[in-house]
Picture (cartoon, rainbow, N blue to C red):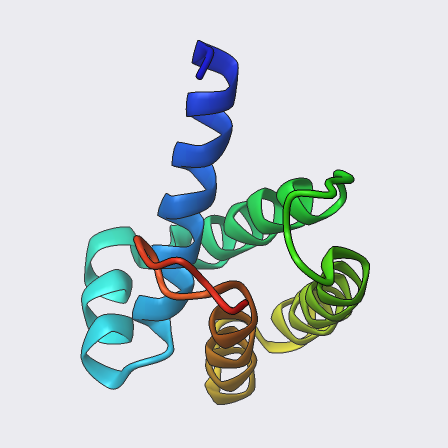
Length: 111
C-alpha cells in the first residue's frame, strides 16, 4: 500500500472509531471530556472521512453500490442531525447505525 492509501485507510479507521465511541454513554462522555467544544467538528470530520471512502468506486467489495448508497444516505442524515443539534441523542443513535453499516473499527465490516 502506498502512503496515500495508508493515510486514507487510517483516517477512515479513526473516524469509525470515534463514531463507535460516541454511540455509547461512556465513550461519548470520554470524547466530550477529551475534545470539549471540538467534538462536533471532530464528528463532522469523521463523517467526511467515511463519505470519502464510500464515494469511491470499487468492485472488490460485495454489493458495493448498495452498501455505498446506504452509507452515504446515513452520512447525510447524520450531517443534518449534527447541524441541527450537535452531538445529541439522535446523532449518537445515527452514529451507531452508521458504524453497523460500515463495520466496527478494525473489523472486517459487513459482507
